[in-house]
Amino acid sequence: MELVQDTSCPPLAYVKGVPLIKYFAEAIEPLQSFQAWPDDLLISTYPRSGTTWVSEILDMIYQGGDLEKCCRDPIYLRVPFLESGGPGTPSAAQDAPACGPAAPDSAGSEGEGEAGQVPRVVYVARNAKDVAVSYYYFCKMAKLHPDPCTWDSFLEKFMDSKGGPDCSEEGLSEGRSANLRLYCCLLSPSLVSYGSRYQHVQAWWELSCTHPVLCLFYEDMKEDPKRETEKILEFVGCSLPAETVDLIVQYTSFQEMRKNPMTDSTTLDPEHVDHTVSPFMRKGMVGDWKSTFTVAQNEHFDAHYAEKMASCSLPFRWQL
Image (cartoon, rainbow, N blue to C red; front, side, top):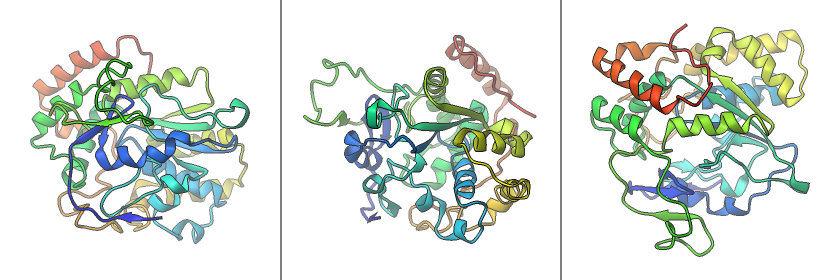
């Protein structure tokens, strides 16, 4: 797995209508012909919604709860992002795993495998207020992301970010690669990488009605991690002894993962991920948004959220 060493931080780029870090957009090129196998398992989340958590749970499940095997490599190598790329980060596109985070798609779909079979997907969603706060601090410490500036300005970007521009043939007629649905341009400062959180969760929720997608909620996982781990076990068709399930729940708790160098991202180059600004695993709480949102921001967000999610039945909880 190759580490890309370029140290520049270019503007975001569009992939199928979704704004991404340019390195990630370029890393997706080999995935245009990616064919999933029927037994593949993909993970998809909007940023800061439990990606590392569910990745560690799944790796522990596949390793039968063997702690030594789960410490063989950092989590970003054991369950690599398909779109990963950039300075100091592993490029996984050539090494597509059987279990790994899914590349983003504005339609929320993945490549079909043999005989038209669609791979299974575990999707984790988190309430938007906690996501916004966590994403803000992540963008401050992860130097591949554009500078989030102030919390107030980042919140506006988060709320107003679109999935992307017109992706029709006319919309992509200029500046598009001949064989890749990717083009790069300077984006509006009102966009965040991965685009609209509203579109992301709604697309996957709708897809779960017709495809093998297990939708989990961060808040449910915090409330009863054993119950949610058992849902994952059932979804992947795996049976483990009760004591092994208890071990997985224990070692995938926030407290354990935060002190585990294989899951807390401290193995990444500090030149690109600055843990002195903010730890990768910051708080892992439900409802911590209250410590950051002002009353005015909360009222403004609630009105905006009600409008954007009016047609969606997703049952998010803002606190436990």
